[in-house]
Length: 254
Image 1 (spheres, helix red, strand yellow):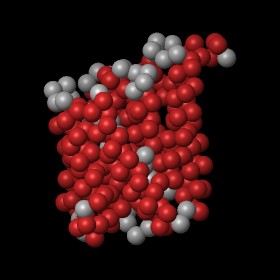
Image 2 (cartoon, rainbow, N blue to C red):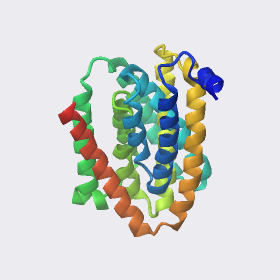
Image 3 (cartoon, rainbow, N blue to C red):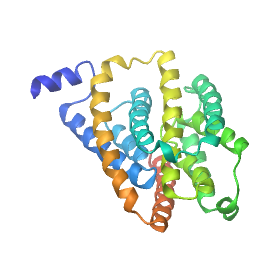
């Protein structure tokens, strides 16, 4: 076991105990996201932040979330709302390219406050609940969320209310959110790689986190199937509100 740990953690800054904790959290985070559609990304980000520096945290978190969301998207692909997908991807490309150029120049605390306030508006504004959101809306959501994710990491709560507003049932919300986040994180780590981040030394750690994350996704999907639609909607709103409060609290105490 010790030799295996040395191989996995070679040339990284993680201790073996931290590695085990991250694997457990990866399972739990993916389970939560597969059940409620989101929330796991912010949990994973918060725990990873305890052990990794910011320059390593955001690229690695993006890679972990890519794997977690890709597994969920693969399992639930038939539920994806495809007509809005190209517009979100185009927006994500634009936002990530702009954010990549500014990633070292804007205060993260400001972006967290903006993100939190936007989530509050998206969840609780009366007109948002009944509004119809077309292609231009998802182009804009892609630009904004992809820009912010280059700095903050977990922007699933920003995207989720828009998907929930156009989706008739929970499986479509979870599946569409999964494919959106998969493609956005893929774009993000591609840009970080182009900017010179060395993923190679972290590949064994990432492989372990992706395996445990897929296991959590598989388990959570079965819970989602049994979850009543109303309970899903209430849980989704609670997680979104909690995520926004956590962002604001992090700015206040940071």
